[in-house]
Image (tube, rainbow, N blue to C red; front, top):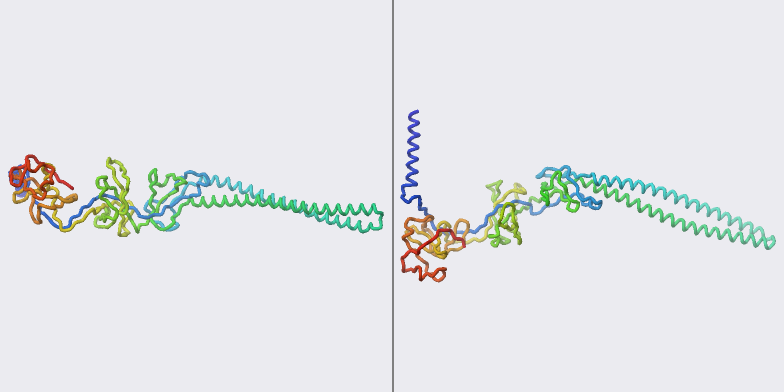
Length: 444
């Protein structure tokens, strides 16, 4: 036990000695001199942002569009499958409240029964009226025959009687012709009545049939195979208990998971750098080891303000080149949009760049010099050095002790291109240090 305590004590002592040696033995009061090597090679300028996967194409699952014909403005979703459910064509998706349409359909059924009764009554009336007219025609034809027989038999009678019989015969013929015309007109009238009631009957039958078809659509089924994704409406996601409008009866969507896109939002400061066609490296938070590629397909022209943020952002759509069964809508992505790529360029970390008088960029060399440099484009970590450094040189990332006693070695190529009057402040022949400086990274 005593040996164990001795070992623990020795360990603590050694740790304290190491800490003291690392932090206090340099005599620089915590000012560490960290070096970095000037590198040469491929340089990428990228803008990184998070995004969310969505299907590039999707089919909307609609409720009964016909409901608005029956003056039904809204209906409630009674039951609905869970979001993310994989369904096949014809599978159940949701059930909508049928109460209002069902009540109106019952009213139409009563109207249909009344129309059918009227149709049957009219048909019977028509049959009876026309039958009476036909019987009357038959009787009048008999009457004409009888009058003709009396006329023929009266040829030996006095002229007055013959004349009277001729009048009677002609009157019978006239009555028969009038009856025929009346029957023709009656037939047309009854036919018109039947056409009218038949049309009303067909209209009622069609309306009931259409209402029944619309009522059947209150049970929503999948139009094709896919995964059910809840529709994002104005009032939030459409789900069980939600109300949908008959003018926009979208119940859910079935995305095409074979082609996906990442929706991301870029700050207004960087949006000018984003162009359609730029390449994108896509990472998935759910699968850190999986890397995908993509391409910018759309950049919004109008900015928007996201919730809990004061900055304006612009929506950017990135098409995912690969198709993967693991990809699901609403997965979070990291998007690195390639803005510019250069080969065989010299670059250093941004921390190594110092600025004097807002016009002179310089670095601290390991050999004890302060060297002016000309900066090129930069990314979030490094900056291209167009002039002033070569590959393999060592530079300081921190401010060395000798910085105050050393002047800047300027580049002759930049004379006359700086903001300050160099002849009044510094020249190549003058070794006097420029008074006052600030240290900060600069991104062109």
